[in-house]
Length: 95
Image (cartoon, rainbow, N blue to C red; front, side):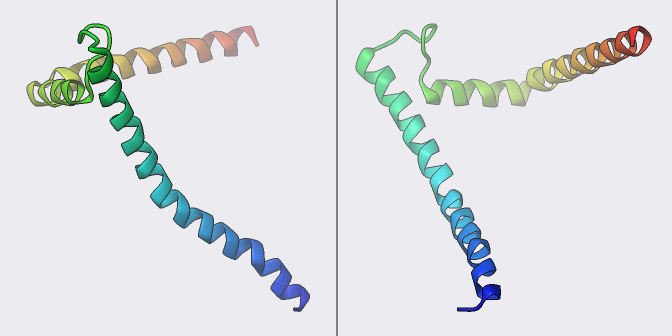
């Protein structure tokens, strides 16, 4: 094994880890959502305490369909960037 081969080993290991991440993230997401669903069913939480994943998804889709989500997202982004601009202006003047 030459010195050049030695330096190529971490690159190959990084590619292998990247492939593992492509599988690991979706599997972890499925386990998280499944555990959330089982917890809601097992403890029978009311929906105002801990809604089920299906209820959250259906509410998301309804807000997306009627335009409420886009309206509130736009207003939130306007407030975020307005606050950022105000903070940068104050910092520029005081700095």
